[in-house]
Amino acid sequence: MTTTLSGPAIAPRNGEAPKRIVVLLHGYGSDGRDLIALGQHWAGDMDETLFVAPNAPAPCAINPGGYEWFPLSGDRIAGRIAGTEQAAPVIRDFLAALWEQTGLGPEQTVLVGFSQGAMMALNVGTAMDKRLKGIIAFSGAFIPAPDFADGKFAKPPVLLVHGDSDEVVDPQLSHDAEAELKAAGFDVSLHVSAGTGHGISPDGLAVATAFLLGQGV
Image 1 (cartoon, rainbow, N blue to C red):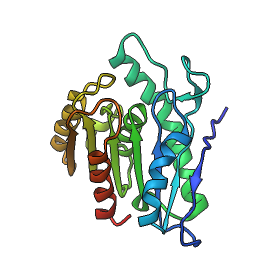
Image 2 (spheres, rainbow, N blue to C red; image 1 turned 60 degrees about the horizontal axis):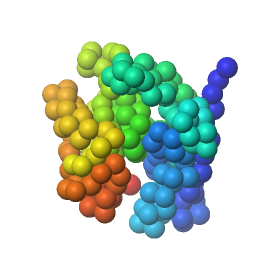
Image 3 (tube, rainbow, N blue to C red; image 1 turned 135 degrees about the vertical axis):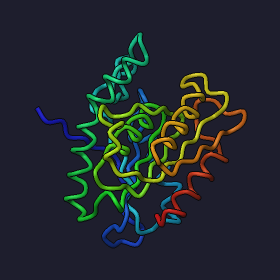
């Protein structure tokens, strides 16, 4: 059975058809209402942009009021590999439907994710034939698609943001992501927020805003 994602959205503030899309992928146990707050923050400066924050496909095992892109596993590494592989087609189908509906495409789209959503944004966004406008990953990790090493995919610009006191997702994982993506030829930058745990600090948000504006969002 096909899984169709849905969640809150913010239409372009100018009242016209969107010229760009920012897709916001929430973290484990959360939902689209949480991350659409980023869209509310950005919308004032990006009035031609559609912001969409879909709920993940499955109810969260430990928080029935929220959702998960994939379940947590005792073996975090193996669980993330299996989980991203299972969830990626659902996100790709969501993007394809969104592009068909709006008449836009990857080159007008930025993927933004937090935590588990950041893992999905990086996994999906670095394994596409056409180049996205960009990827922003807050407090995440890079779990490459199975054929990422073939080097055949488009290479969008990537911003990684992580708190140095994150107790949920090890900040070293963003350093590792930076190294792996740079080695693969990506234009990638990493911002580390001092004294920040598993969340988005004002300085991290400011860096992400500058990245979006720099990409013409």
